[in-house]
Length: 370
Image 1: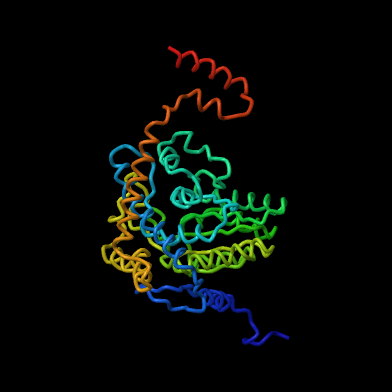
Image 2: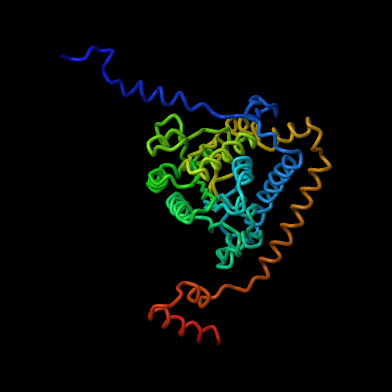
């Protein structure tokens, strides 16, 4: 007997029911007020000040890096202003043993995880020393291939799982990266093995000039985790407290054997996609920029900390001066690095060179000696 209409499958209704469940998680609103006290992580005053200091430092680092790029003293650079809460509050929830697999915009996270700043500058210049990660610093070099880090993170997480490590692999991409095949393969692989990975999509609204609405017809990027069978959440990426809580919760589940998580942080990049000729005024309006500037993570966090009496202009000025001095010293150290040679690249490519590289090594060794 044919099923009546009420019993018939309605895929559209099912999709709507799923999408409605993904409400944005927020703790600190745009006015710097706690709107979700139950979820407040109750970080100590010292921890709150430290997180704010890192965010201010990174905003100055971004400004200085843009200036250095324009002077020709840095190479490739992807601006980070507007994403400090998404990047730094997530890293703040990690432990030293955790591995970060960054995209090319995620240099701040690996610097705060232990990579010396001068090496970050060398990476920007394409110098091989920028990718020689110090012993004990659990980071990968920034990935240039869009989304490739998601597959790598699944592999690193599986390796940790097999070794019984109480640590996670965390990786980042943008909203554009969520359209890549590697994104789906990575979250599916980790989900299938219940590996300790945390996947973060920083939805900063544009993949270069392509708006998020053209990336996918899904209402949220977070809901894509459902297909991989992993817990997913959409977070206010301009709210450092919400980002911290979401990341810490995902980390705790991962090290307790509950598998990976997907976090979508809804944020905004105030600058261009990269300094390689992108002009955001061609695809973004001043009204859009102004609306997002009112959500600035530094402004709302500053308001919150000032109300608590643990932050003021003097303290911020101290952090800014410290940032300028450390950046100045780091760029000087990067300038002092030996010039990169062809023989350097050949010597670090393989443990044992194939014959054709040995031939090239001999040729360039002789040429460089002249």
